[in-house]
Length: 484
Image 1 (tube, rainbow, N blue to C red):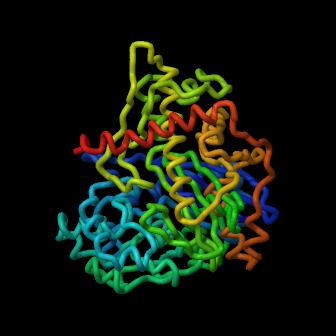
Image 2 (image 1 turned 180 degrees about the vertical axis):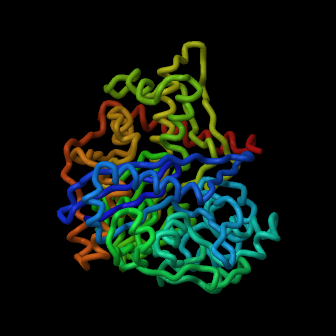
C-alpha cells in the first residue's frame, strides 16, 4: 500500500492506493486561513499536523489493515509558503501563504536585480518565498535574526514525519532561490536576501527517498518500520503526476482555489517576461511551464457567499447549454493577479451592470471572467514557446460542464474529462510514494487516466467569445490606474 498526503490551503487530504494504483480510500482534515490585514494570508503550521492526524484517523477508522501495509508515502503541498524555524525547529511566526501579497514592494526590488530572472527563469512574484523573507527582515527583524531554517509547507510536514530538513525540485523552484536549470540552490540569490544554503533544506528529486517515517508516527498510525517518504512535489506538479501530465505535449487546466494552465516540457524553457512559471517537474530531468491565476473557484465561492446561494446552485441556474457572453464582464482579481500581469494591487470588478443584470447574468460573468483569465495564460504560454492542442480538466470547478464548455470555446481546444476517479494531487503524491519505495519507472507509473468525455468548443459562439475576450483584455489597463 502507498499513501499520498496533500497539504492544501483548505485542508489535508490522505489517499491510500495499492500496488496496482487502485484507490482504496481517502479522508480529509480541514484547515482555515487567517487574514489579519488586507492582502495577508497565513496559517499556523501546527494546524497542518492536526489536519493530517485528522485525515489519517479517518483512514484508520475504515482501512486500518490497509494502512498498516503502507511502504511508501508521497507528499504534495501548497507552494511558496514561508515556514520559519529557529535552531530548535520551533515555528517563529504563522506561515505566510502563497496568496499573501504583502511583500509586493520587496518582490519588485528583488525582481529588479537581473540575477533573479536569469538564474530562476521566473519573475519574482510577491507570492514567492524569497520576497516574504525580505519582508520579514524589513518588518520583523527580531524574528528574521532567529531564522535557522526556511521550509515550504509540505516540507514542514515532512520534518514532523521524518525529523529531516528535505525538499525537492518542483516546490523549491517556486521560492526564487533555485537555479531552475541546474536544479540546485543558488548561493548567490540566497546571499541577496541575507541567507545562505545553511538556511535551506537539502534537495532530492520528487521520485527519490526524502526521509523515513519516524517510529513514533509509524506506531501511532499502525505502520511498520522503514516506511519511505518520497521527495514529493508542489501541488501542481503532484496533480500533473496524478493526471499523467509528465511528457512533453501534455497539458491540464486546474479549476481549484487558484487556476492553473499547466504544460509538461522535456527541456527547460524560461521566458520570465511573459509571467509564465518555468519550474522543475517532480520527475528527474523534466520541467514544466504554467500560468497561474489567483482566484478561480475562489471567485465563484466569493459570489456564492455574497448571493447566499451555493456554487452548485449558481452554476445549475445557467443550465448546461453555453450562452453567448452578455455585456457584463467580471475581472477575477480578488487578491491581485499573477499571470500575465504580476500585479498584487489590482482588484476585481464587475463592468457593464444594468437594471436587467440578474443573478444568473452575474454568475455567467464570473465563470467567463475566470475563463478569460485562463485564456490570458494560454496566450502567455504561446509567447513562451509552448503549444497546447487539448487539455485535461481537474479541480472542483471541472464538475461544471458549462464552465468547461466556456473554457473550450475561449481557448479553442478540446477539454478532456477523465473517467470517474480522483487523479489530483493526493493521487499524484501516492504515485511518487510508490516510485520512491519500489524504484519503479516513473513514466510507467504516471500514466494518464482514461478519458470519459470530451468537451468541444462551441463553434457558433467563437466569434462572440472573441469579442468578449477583447473587451476583457481592454479593461485591465483601463482600471489599473484606479487601484490603490
